[in-house]
Length: 204
Image (cartoon, rainbow, N blue to C red; front, side, top):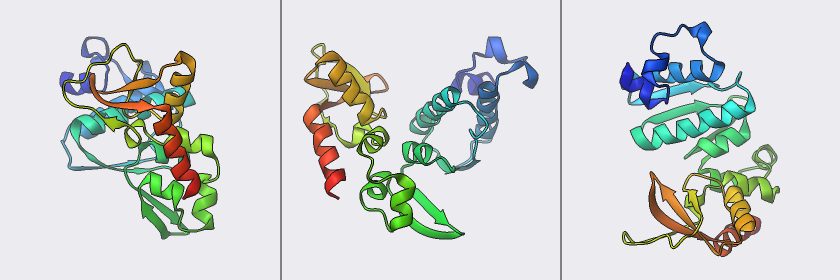
C-alpha cells in the first residue's frame, strides 16, 4: 500500500489512514488509480476518470497519467469527451461517431490528416495555436548523444507541448532548449524545429 501511495504521490505517512471524506477530489482520483494498479493489470480501462475534476486538478492528474504510463508501460484505454485531453494523452486516438469508428491514428495524423469533415471540426484542425499546444516536444526535438551538456540552456520536459516550448523560448530569448526525460537530457529543441512542425501541420 505504501508503495502504491508513493507511486501516485500521496505520502503514506500522511494519507495512509485517511477516509475518503478527508481527501480532495484529486486525491480521491489518485487513490482510485492506486487501487486499479494494485492488481498489476496488463490493460487498464479509464472511463471519463477526470470528468468531475476542476481544470487545474485535471491538468495535474493528466501529467500523472503521462508520468505513470512512461514509468510502468501500461496499456490504458482512456475514454474522454474532452478533445484536448484526448489529444494530449493519447499515443493513438480512436474517434467514434454514432457508434462507428471514423478514424484511428496518432494525434499528429488526426490533426494533420483528419479522415473527414467531422474529425476536422472536432479537433479544430485549422487552429494553429491549439495544435502547437497539443503536439509534444518529443515530436519535434533533435536527439542528442549521451555525453551532451546543457550549457546553461533552459530545460523543458519531453512530454510538454510545443506551445509551452515556444513560450519559454520567447520569454528567455534562448536559442535552444534542452529536452529532459526523467532528469536526463535526451534532445534539443529550437525555434526552427517548432516552425518546421507548424509548417508541416499547416501544409498537411
